[in-house]
Length: 490
Length: 70
Image (cartoon, rainbow over all chains, first blue to last red; front, side, top):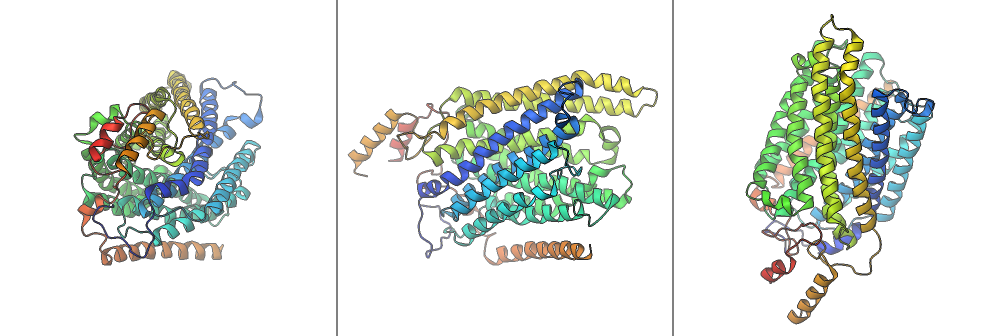
């Protein structure tokens, strides 16, 4: 029975197991493709990274030049991995919180296929030299409808679930998920109109570009990951979140302030000063949602940290939540003009982006998959060792990447501000750190490979379907449960 | 380009109005009352409050938990 919140008596009672079964194919397809794209994005990132300290690496292939492979890395990471991982998360979480089956499953599966095709064609387009040159929107314009149309299916399914939900209460994660489905289509359509469709030119186009570039992280990836954290942390440890009041304050302050922050990317650019100031103020105001979310996640965990030893989901969720606080503080401070005088146009920014995406967003998506996949497929994860390898590679790889890039960036910034230092000396100084970055990329890729093997095994058809997976770990456990059930006549 | 601007502004206005309407709807609908119970709405019989629901494979104290629940 659901705790004492309102239910809509006119809506059919759907058990948790039925909800999960309805999501099995749809969500698995989205998440499986997200892992494939993560592998591709990681390899593309690794090639880009190697080229920064060894420029001749694969230098004879024009389709692998830095100007092509680097956008492929970013776009396959944000759309291929991020888009599909977040969509799968959105669908499963919404179905569970609404206590309803996932609607329009064939349409959503078709949408997943079309979306993947869009990312594939976009990546091929960029590799073959048809990049638009607009950061984060490099995919050729003709591939973008294949990314937008499937999202319409997700929006429709999301609203259908919400308006036919059994629980009348809107849990905080649902606020984030509903908001994402409203924000993201607006973001991408407006950004494409203002950049690749040419509604505005010059500096105004750069403003639109960075309004989008910042918000695709803050109003698409972040809300989905925060929604996942608000669900997973209390769910795994069996304890409600510390302050529900703060969680709602966090949502609404995020909704109000994040949208304004993008222009801090253009500090020092030929823009009116107030445009940058708006971005700085928006960034500083983000301390409000970040602090509220941070307090909630960390205080909920107080007294339950020992579960980190035993729960893979919790490890990734807590890692993501802690790095969310750190990366967000870093990001807000980074927007200040005094800070940017040193770190702008340096490796510091790259360190920050990866700290956020691989330290916060990706672990929360992994946490969601670790929690949901056994429940969706009825199978258990095949190897605890592979999970541990995945976790430690993700954590250590992210920390190495972020610390190497941020330290190198600060030193690089000070050196670039000193006109007596020749530019090539600065380049030589950063080279060992760029090698460390490649090493960090290799560590992260190793973790992804471990996860891929585990994921591949869990989606294999097994003869035995567990009723309550992850609590049941072996066939023997299952048999004992069946005998117990018979004894109790349940 | 004029129509693109009209489209962007119309869309932005629609988004803004939707968010304000959603906030008003939530207040009217009592979404911000009884928050303590709302925080517990994620628990159910199979994944109840007070029970840890995730372990590394092969490491869950399964039967003890099930017996305690019964």
